[in-house]
Length: 482
View 1 (cartoon, rainbow, N blue to C red):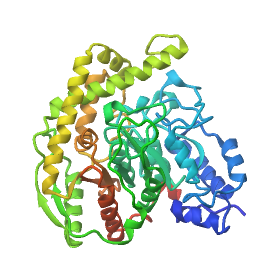
View 2 (cartoon, rainbow, N blue to C red):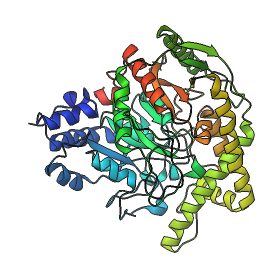
View 3 (cartoon, rainbow, N blue to C red):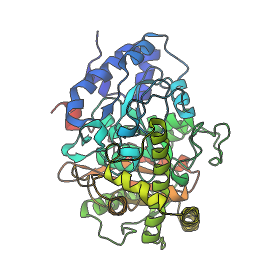
View 4 (cartoon, rainbow, N blue to C red):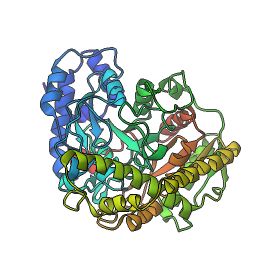
């Protein structure tokens, strides 16, 4: 008997895997529930691309892996960077349309070992270089399941939309400047960006965007995120560097509240521009909740992080990584970069990168490392920093479309995401937590950041907040079928 979607929706990934182990449901039934919901909501939200349903059905019909924490649970992979054997990987670009991966990345292999069953990809902006997911290769923009006029965010926008629309409880994402936290905030989900290189990047990649990029998941429950990181973290062979060692279990930390924390509340944008009242209200409300839970909250301001200088440094790091990928794609096809294959922002990003020298790039990396030093020193006074995730509520579709020149486009998007990319530059873990919805019914996330290597602290705090103000059963209209 097919699994009813209402039953599927009320369980997170760990609970679904437990049902598989107990033979209350089969892997095939879970997959068919995910596919049925995907087919229902996809015309509305356009979150899934390049499905591989026959491959997934064959895997589901085989023996389940009872040793995996997520045995038999359906999984979608973001359509950028993460190679998975036999799956198409376009990086959100027409340049790579039809290209399939010949091997698993190390992270994909670890996700398979955890028991996940891959059945497709999720949408992303071209090369992940935007705060919304409206890449031309997918035909339509990715829409927010809470309000279809708004974006689901980016660059892991398809992942967040798929989870918020009830297709699956947890989905792969990546974050090079907020790309897990942005869509988690927009879609009312939990999204943790781990410490730099906590999860493996190889074997093809050494690092992403000069060390800005990391990979993990977006989920409805905190415990799914913690259990995935238990299954995936740790350096892979030949990694250029590694996160501080952690030999415990993130999942096991969730059962006890953290001791009283020193929390710095920051509501002034690093850009110096006004923050929307809804976003300030969400952060202030979260601070009040933290105080009710026994933590000490102190209003503060970030040290001078030179927003304009940092913007230029990040623009060059992202453009250089993007140009490298474009060059590889053009060499593979024997063509030159053109607007027939690339969107305006990406096409001009290649030119921007080529107009800068190796010394310019080294200066940009040095500036980002300097940010890490300053934030590291600032964190000596706090256990956790609390900020709005974004400077405005979820953007309308088209607000950040990539049809402008790269510098103009990226300068605009960095004002929207101003609280986020500094923690990519510093390598610190940071998370967006869904504690607030505005009067229009749109989710407004809040960000917590900790010192390098302290995912344990963030997970413990997130679980405490989840118990105090549960969000798991707060379901989007699209998921409910309204």
